[in-house]
Length: 337
Image (cartoon, rainbow, N blue to C red; front, side, top):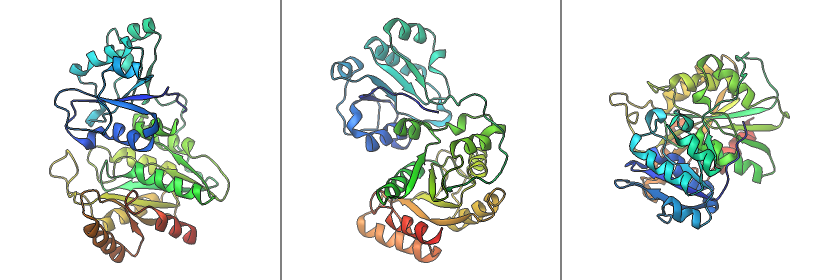
């Protein structure tokens, strides 16, 4: 699934108080900063990307061509009190690009307003038609899947960083996006959590088709096998991806599933064990290739000790993809697979 998003962008943050729920805007600001002209925040917003605060009209005057819906809250809904801002963006001549489960075109009057203004409503979370049921047949090429102890722990950042490192080393590698933010960054992918459950593994097979024997598809993960709400999409993505290797992604300091009180995170060893046990269905040779940790809440000294302990305990390379880089992970992959 390829998408055209006209740049530059205005990143819409609404009045979202939590940075973790603004992961779409945060990710685009990090990976496509050169395309961002500003941020649009409503009163009460607790997120600041360090971009100029602009209205839709001001952003259009500054050259923006698209308003990016930057929030990925639970359920992917469109809060009613944010809708006026969408009409303002259309009136200013901006396309609206969103990864919500609710379609932009279903907002009363918005599609008509967009048509009259000559702008587009781009729904990222619309999978292509005709997806097959997964068949589990072995495909050529190699696949690396990110798996998480929870949502929003760095699966996308890890995959993007690893694909970039591989490409810079001259390896054959492609980042395969599975979520709305990754698709916006890459310009294509598969909105895996919007696929009807019977076709999730088939969609993952379509996303990473046959390839050269030495080519790596670096696949962005979704959810967590231990997540009470999203484990199903995680399992289907894994079976369809047939990963030769996987990277465990985690956030230092997090102990409970975010927004789901009463559900503790698994240990890294527990997640490795369950991933191998379930992944063997479509790839009996699946194995862990390392651990990637978001240590942004730690000091530099704390980070070094934290990563070293995980590495000693697991016997696998452990990095922070942003603070330390993913070189050791790629070294291990090159030496092992």
